[in-house]
Length: 356
Image 1 (spheres, rainbow, N blue to C red):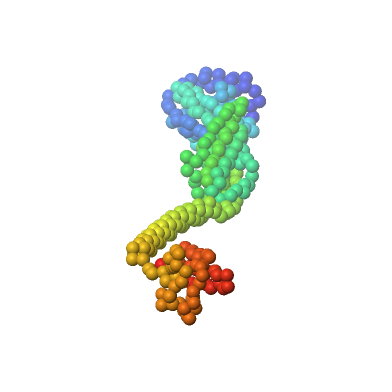
Image 2 (cartoon, helix red, strand yellow; image 1 turned 30 degrees about the vertical axis):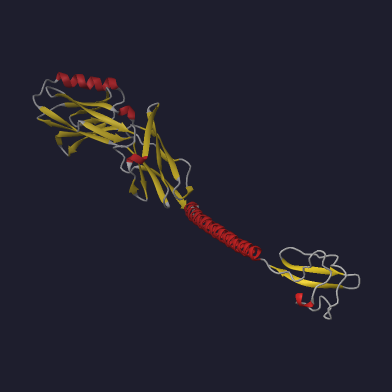
């Protein structure tokens, strides 16, 4: 049967009564000696006693919470004890319901007599919240993206990790920092990487006793980047510049050849003209040395010329008549065709003379 003890003085009185009954030789074990549980869960400790015993007490954080005397067990809504198997007093199971961090610390079981006491350590953890700031993100392909995950109200410091498309992210891509917030810890984790394709991003936070880690997820939408014409433009400009350079060189060579050909032709023409002029000069010199008979010449003072002396019968009358005087004017021009004009009072006659 079980009874509820309302005050610690009554429990202390029971302990004193148990001490007065005398010592019972023997030993006992307490398991587990270290227990870590999540806030709000239940934790159990087992005390196994070898030999006969009369009384047992349980204290949590230095406060007496449960006593066992024979088959009388004091319990409360949060603390309770029972025999591990029906009718077997060698094993007692002690349970703490709805554990909070106030119950964390030492849990001590004492068996009256020479059994002494044993103490276990209770650790209580608390899970908080996880949230990726900013929600879903849309970026251009190959753009650098950054996600920030905030974990709040955790104890102790949680372990934070990332996944993308259900695959673990290399820890070198993110950095996590923590800060105390009263009796809790807040963590901030920043993930940076280059966007390649659409990706589901998840941030995970957990502690040892949490069966399923807390998580938050967002979606990264990657838009293909516009065609980069820079490389193509650079190639085209390079090829165009090279082609212009080649054309310029060809043009320079062509102009140089044309100029050289013109210069050669000019020199040849000048040489030809010089040769021609030399030949003309030579011919003139020869003509001056040999001389030619001028059939139209009449010595000064002579007033008549025999018809036989002139080959041009039209110049003087064929009947042998004479002129009373020489032609008043005889005009000659430069080398080439010349005109000789003979003027008389009665008539004028022209004669063409070619001088070489």
